[in-house]
Image (cartoon, rainbow, N blue to C red; front, side, top):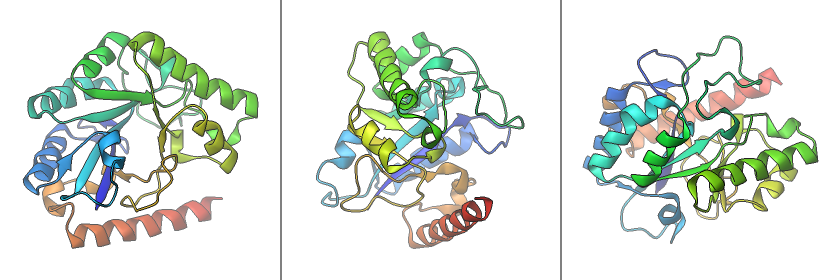
Length: 245
């Protein structure tokens, strides 16, 4: 059984995109104590469903500076890989992109030198578009620019192939996914569940760590009680999403 976890900012503000640094350490150390292998994306998808032990991948969306401050030292200390998705048009700025809600918290984003430090420590960098739009709302040309330009910027700055993508807000259509497939090997969604055998690598599910605050309460994360809880949360979130549309 394999899992992809999603984090955004590591801070103590309590916002919906925040996870406390202390809780983050507890999650990482707790998974290792459970015997979970913390791996990169390539290893996670290799021999899917045939690994001798449960595996998890840590992912970070947007590229907040707090990840550099709090996650980088811990992951480097423990030799744990991770994957961070960058909004290339906002590197070195804050998360005030056009689609950001007025009530959303504003945090600093990493600059290119900080991103290169993550890269040097074994944290892989992927694309989260240029402007963080709702991709399902874009015309074909605008969609192509978001996908191609973000990939090109990352590869120019990092001098390394960029193969992984994350859908902003988790929104996409079938045509969106096919466009992503032309540029990237994998893409992650906000579909909240464990990985399953046969999942499309361009539609990989993730569990948002927002639902695992107070990690000691949910230990072991790979335990039956936590899986049941997360399934229930996923159902409630889907119902709420349908009511809003």
